[in-house]
Amino acid sequence: ITTFQALIRGAFWCALPLLGFHPLMVAVILTVHGAYSFFTHTQMIGKLGWLENILITPSLHGIHHASDDKYLDKNYGDVFVFWDKLFGTFQKEEEAPTYGLTHPIKSHSFLWQHFHYYLEIIEACNRTSGFVNKFKVVFGSPALLDQDIRPTLERRFLQYKTKAPAKFKLKGYINIQLVLSVIVLTVTTAFWSYLDIVDGVLISLFVLITLINCGALLEQRRWIYYLECVRLILVFGFAFYKLDWVELIFLPTIILMILERAFALSSLYRNYVLQYEDA
Image (spheres, one colour):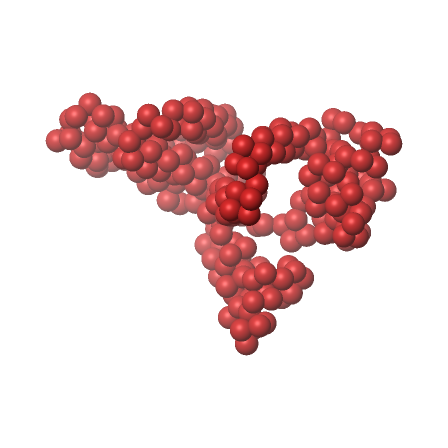
Protein backbone atom coordinates (compact mmCIF):
# COMPACT_ATOMS: atom_id res chain seq x y z
CA ILE A 1 0.00 0.00 0.00
CA THR A 2 1.40 3.37 -0.98
CA THR A 3 0.24 6.97 -1.07
CA PHE A 4 -0.82 6.37 -4.66
CA GLN A 5 -3.59 4.05 -3.48
CA ALA A 6 -6.02 6.91 -2.91
CA LEU A 7 -5.50 8.15 -6.47
CA ILE A 8 -5.75 4.72 -8.10
CA ARG A 9 -8.77 3.56 -6.11
CA GLY A 10 -10.41 6.96 -6.35
CA ALA A 11 -10.58 6.65 -10.13
CA PHE A 12 -12.71 3.51 -9.77
CA TRP A 13 -14.91 4.83 -6.97
CA CYS A 14 -15.62 8.08 -8.83
CA ALA A 15 -16.80 6.10 -11.84
CA LEU A 16 -19.53 4.29 -9.87
CA PRO A 17 -21.95 7.28 -9.62
CA LEU A 18 -21.52 7.78 -13.37
CA LEU A 19 -22.67 4.19 -13.85
CA GLY A 20 -25.87 4.84 -11.90
CA PHE A 21 -24.97 4.07 -8.29
CA HIS A 22 -26.13 6.68 -5.79
CA PRO A 23 -23.18 8.62 -4.27
CA LEU A 24 -24.51 8.00 -0.74
CA MET A 25 -24.54 4.26 -1.41
CA VAL A 26 -20.93 4.39 -2.59
CA ALA A 27 -19.90 6.41 0.48
CA VAL A 28 -21.60 3.98 2.89
CA ILE A 29 -20.05 0.94 1.20
CA LEU A 30 -16.59 2.51 1.32
CA THR A 31 -17.02 3.30 5.02
CA VAL A 32 -18.14 -0.24 5.87
CA HIS A 33 -15.42 -1.71 3.68
CA GLY A 34 -12.73 0.39 5.35
CA ALA A 35 -13.95 -0.41 8.85
CA TYR A 36 -14.14 -4.15 8.13
CA SER A 37 -10.54 -4.13 6.89
CA PHE A 38 -9.33 -3.31 10.40
CA PHE A 39 -10.80 -6.63 11.53
CA THR A 40 -9.14 -8.72 8.80
CA HIS A 41 -5.63 -7.31 9.26
CA THR A 42 -4.67 -8.96 12.54
CA GLN A 43 -2.99 -12.15 13.72
CA MET A 44 -4.67 -11.95 17.12
CA ILE A 45 -7.74 -13.77 15.79
CA GLY A 46 -7.45 -17.35 14.56
CA LYS A 47 -9.74 -19.40 12.34
CA LEU A 48 -13.47 -18.78 12.80
CA GLY A 49 -14.96 -22.09 11.72
CA TRP A 50 -18.13 -22.03 9.58
CA LEU A 51 -17.95 -18.23 9.29
CA GLU A 52 -15.06 -18.67 6.86
CA ASN A 53 -17.51 -20.12 4.34
CA ILE A 54 -19.28 -16.76 4.20
CA LEU A 55 -16.99 -13.90 5.20
CA ILE A 56 -13.34 -13.07 4.72
CA THR A 57 -11.68 -13.57 8.10
CA PRO A 58 -8.20 -12.61 9.34
CA SER A 59 -7.02 -16.13 8.58
CA LEU A 60 -8.32 -16.00 5.00
CA HIS A 61 -7.09 -12.49 4.31
CA GLY A 62 -3.67 -13.35 5.72
CA ILE A 63 -3.31 -15.74 2.77
CA HIS A 64 -3.59 -12.77 0.42
CA HIS A 65 -0.52 -11.18 2.03
CA ALA A 66 1.56 -14.38 2.04
CA SER A 67 4.59 -14.99 -0.18
CA ASP A 68 4.35 -18.79 -0.19
CA ASP A 69 3.94 -20.27 -3.69
CA LYS A 70 0.67 -22.04 -2.87
CA TYR A 71 -0.82 -18.83 -1.47
CA LEU A 72 0.12 -16.46 -4.29
CA ASP A 73 -2.74 -14.66 -6.08
CA LYS A 74 -5.36 -15.98 -3.65
CA ASN A 75 -8.21 -14.49 -1.59
CA TYR A 76 -8.65 -11.12 -3.28
CA GLY A 77 -12.01 -10.56 -1.61
CA ASP A 78 -12.28 -8.15 1.30
CA VAL A 79 -15.68 -9.00 2.79
CA PHE A 80 -17.40 -11.99 1.16
CA VAL A 81 -15.88 -15.36 0.26
CA PHE A 82 -18.08 -16.14 -2.76
CA TRP A 83 -16.14 -13.80 -5.07
CA ASP A 84 -12.95 -15.82 -4.75
CA LYS A 85 -14.86 -19.08 -5.07
CA LEU A 86 -16.52 -17.72 -8.20
CA PHE A 87 -13.19 -16.83 -9.84
CA GLY A 88 -11.20 -19.80 -8.55
CA THR A 89 -8.90 -17.82 -6.27
CA PHE A 90 -10.16 -19.10 -2.91
CA GLN A 91 -7.63 -20.73 -0.58
CA LYS A 92 -7.98 -21.79 3.04
CA GLU A 93 -5.07 -21.55 5.45
CA GLU A 94 -3.31 -24.91 5.62
CA GLU A 95 0.16 -23.98 6.84
CA ALA A 96 1.11 -20.80 8.64
CA PRO A 97 1.73 -18.20 5.91
CA THR A 98 5.02 -16.42 5.38
CA TYR A 99 4.23 -12.72 5.09
CA GLY A 100 6.07 -10.33 2.83
CA LEU A 101 7.16 -10.08 -0.78
CA THR A 102 8.45 -12.90 -2.94
CA HIS A 103 11.41 -10.63 -3.70
CA PRO A 104 12.02 -8.46 -0.59
CA ILE A 105 12.94 -4.82 -1.12
CA LYS A 106 16.54 -4.20 -0.14
CA SER A 107 15.99 -0.66 1.01
CA HIS A 108 14.33 1.31 3.79
CA SER A 109 13.91 4.28 1.47
CA PHE A 110 10.42 5.79 1.44
CA LEU A 111 10.95 6.87 -2.17
CA TRP A 112 12.23 3.48 -3.33
CA GLN A 113 9.34 1.67 -1.66
CA HIS A 114 6.89 3.88 -3.54
CA PHE A 115 8.51 3.99 -6.96
CA HIS A 116 10.48 0.77 -7.40
CA TYR A 117 7.59 -1.11 -8.99
CA TYR A 118 6.91 1.67 -11.49
CA LEU A 119 10.58 1.62 -12.43
CA GLU A 120 10.35 -2.15 -12.86
CA ILE A 121 7.37 -1.76 -15.20
CA ILE A 122 9.22 0.89 -17.23
CA GLU A 123 12.28 -1.35 -17.45
CA ALA A 124 10.10 -4.29 -18.51
CA CYS A 125 8.47 -2.18 -21.22
CA ASN A 126 11.89 -1.13 -22.49
CA ARG A 127 12.84 -4.79 -22.77
CA THR A 128 9.63 -5.68 -24.62
CA SER A 129 8.80 -4.98 -28.25
CA GLY A 130 5.33 -4.35 -29.68
CA PHE A 131 2.40 -2.40 -28.26
CA VAL A 132 0.42 -5.51 -27.30
CA ASN A 133 3.30 -6.97 -25.30
CA LYS A 134 3.95 -3.65 -23.55
CA PHE A 135 0.22 -3.43 -22.71
CA LYS A 136 0.40 -6.91 -21.14
CA VAL A 137 3.38 -5.85 -19.06
CA VAL A 138 1.50 -2.86 -17.63
CA PHE A 139 -1.91 -4.47 -17.10
CA GLY A 140 -1.08 -8.18 -17.00
CA SER A 141 0.22 -10.55 -14.37
CA PRO A 142 3.37 -9.65 -12.39
CA ALA A 143 4.69 -13.02 -13.55
CA LEU A 144 5.31 -11.41 -16.95
CA LEU A 145 8.15 -9.32 -15.48
CA ASP A 146 11.66 -10.70 -15.85
CA GLN A 147 12.96 -11.94 -12.51
CA ASP A 148 16.26 -10.12 -12.91
CA ILE A 149 14.70 -6.66 -13.31
CA ARG A 150 14.56 -5.78 -9.60
CA PRO A 151 18.15 -6.90 -8.86
CA THR A 152 19.30 -4.92 -11.91
CA LEU A 153 17.54 -1.76 -10.74
CA GLU A 154 18.80 -2.23 -7.19
CA ARG A 155 22.37 -2.37 -8.47
CA ARG A 156 21.70 0.70 -10.58
CA PHE A 157 20.01 2.90 -7.96
CA LEU A 158 21.03 1.50 -4.56
CA GLN A 159 24.71 0.88 -5.18
CA TYR A 160 25.82 3.82 -3.01
CA LYS A 161 24.08 2.55 0.09
CA THR A 162 26.21 3.06 3.20
CA LYS A 163 26.61 0.12 5.55
CA ALA A 164 24.39 0.69 8.58
CA PRO A 165 25.68 0.19 12.13
CA ALA A 166 24.33 -2.63 14.23
CA LYS A 167 22.48 -0.48 16.74
CA PHE A 168 21.32 3.02 17.58
CA LYS A 169 21.89 4.26 21.10
CA LEU A 170 18.96 6.59 20.53
CA LYS A 171 16.48 4.30 18.83
CA GLY A 172 13.69 6.60 19.94
CA TYR A 173 14.98 9.30 17.60
CA ILE A 174 13.36 7.68 14.57
CA ASN A 175 10.26 6.64 16.52
CA ILE A 176 9.69 10.22 17.65
CA GLN A 177 9.86 11.39 14.05
CA LEU A 178 7.38 8.75 12.92
CA VAL A 179 4.94 9.56 15.74
CA LEU A 180 5.29 13.27 14.99
CA SER A 181 4.55 12.63 11.31
CA VAL A 182 1.42 10.64 12.15
CA ILE A 183 0.17 13.37 14.49
CA VAL A 184 0.85 16.17 12.00
CA LEU A 185 -0.73 14.19 9.17
CA THR A 186 -3.83 13.34 11.24
CA VAL A 187 -4.38 16.91 12.42
CA THR A 188 -3.75 18.28 8.92
CA THR A 189 -6.26 15.86 7.41
CA ALA A 190 -8.88 16.78 10.03
CA PHE A 191 -8.50 20.52 9.43
CA TRP A 192 -7.59 20.46 5.74
CA SER A 193 -10.60 22.57 4.76
CA TYR A 194 -9.32 25.39 6.98
CA LEU A 195 -5.87 25.50 5.37
CA ASP A 196 -4.89 27.49 2.33
CA ILE A 197 -2.90 25.94 -0.51
CA VAL A 198 0.47 27.17 0.81
CA ASP A 199 -0.19 25.70 4.26
CA GLY A 200 -1.19 22.36 2.78
CA VAL A 201 1.85 22.16 0.50
CA LEU A 202 4.36 23.12 3.20
CA ILE A 203 2.92 20.75 5.82
CA SER A 204 2.76 17.91 3.30
CA LEU A 205 6.35 18.63 2.32
CA PHE A 206 7.40 18.49 5.98
CA VAL A 207 5.77 15.06 6.44
CA LEU A 208 7.29 13.79 3.19
CA ILE A 209 10.80 14.94 4.12
CA THR A 210 10.42 13.39 7.58
CA LEU A 211 9.48 10.01 6.10
CA ILE A 212 12.36 10.17 3.63
CA ASN A 213 14.63 11.11 6.51
CA CYS A 214 13.59 8.05 8.55
CA GLY A 215 14.56 5.73 5.71
CA ALA A 216 17.84 7.59 5.26
CA LEU A 217 18.60 7.21 8.97
CA LEU A 218 18.03 3.46 8.83
CA GLU A 219 20.38 3.20 5.87
CA GLN A 220 22.86 5.72 7.24
CA ARG A 221 22.91 7.86 4.13
CA ARG A 222 25.64 10.47 4.13
CA TRP A 223 23.21 13.28 3.30
CA ILE A 224 21.04 12.78 6.41
CA TYR A 225 22.34 15.92 8.11
CA TYR A 226 21.58 18.11 5.10
CA LEU A 227 18.04 16.74 4.87
CA GLU A 228 17.58 17.58 8.54
CA CYS A 229 18.71 21.14 7.79
CA VAL A 230 16.17 21.41 4.97
CA ARG A 231 13.43 20.23 7.31
CA LEU A 232 14.48 22.68 10.01
CA ILE A 233 14.54 25.55 7.52
CA LEU A 234 11.10 24.51 6.30
CA VAL A 235 9.64 24.58 9.82
CA PHE A 236 11.02 28.02 10.67
CA GLY A 237 10.18 29.35 7.22
CA PHE A 238 6.58 28.21 7.65
CA ALA A 239 6.41 29.81 11.11
CA PHE A 240 7.74 33.14 9.80
CA TYR A 241 5.31 32.96 6.89
CA LYS A 242 2.34 32.48 9.23
CA LEU A 243 3.56 35.31 11.47
CA ASP A 244 3.87 37.52 8.39
CA TRP A 245 7.61 37.89 8.96
CA VAL A 246 8.43 37.15 5.32
CA GLU A 247 11.65 39.16 5.50
CA LEU A 248 13.02 36.62 8.04
CA ILE A 249 12.38 33.49 5.96
CA PHE A 250 16.04 33.21 4.95
CA LEU A 251 17.33 33.87 8.49
CA PRO A 252 17.39 30.17 9.57
CA THR A 253 19.49 29.28 6.53
CA ILE A 254 22.01 32.00 7.33
CA ILE A 255 22.18 30.99 11.01
CA LEU A 256 22.73 27.31 10.13
CA MET A 257 25.54 28.23 7.74
CA ILE A 258 27.23 30.33 10.43
CA LEU A 259 26.86 27.60 13.08
CA GLU A 260 28.18 24.94 10.71
CA ARG A 261 31.19 27.09 9.97
CA ALA A 262 31.85 27.90 13.62
CA PHE A 263 30.98 24.64 15.41
CA ALA A 264 30.92 21.92 12.70
CA LEU A 265 27.29 21.06 13.40
CA SER A 266 27.34 18.11 11.02
CA SER A 267 29.98 16.36 13.16
CA LEU A 268 28.12 17.18 16.36
CA TYR A 269 24.94 15.79 14.84
CA ARG A 270 26.57 12.49 13.94
CA ASN A 271 28.39 12.09 17.25
CA TYR A 272 25.92 13.40 19.83
CA VAL A 273 22.46 13.22 18.28
CA LEU A 274 22.63 9.82 16.59
CA GLN A 275 25.34 8.31 18.81
CA TYR A 276 26.03 5.20 16.75
CA GLU A 277 27.27 2.02 18.33
CA ASP A 278 29.83 -0.24 16.73
CA ALA A 279 28.74 -3.68 15.60
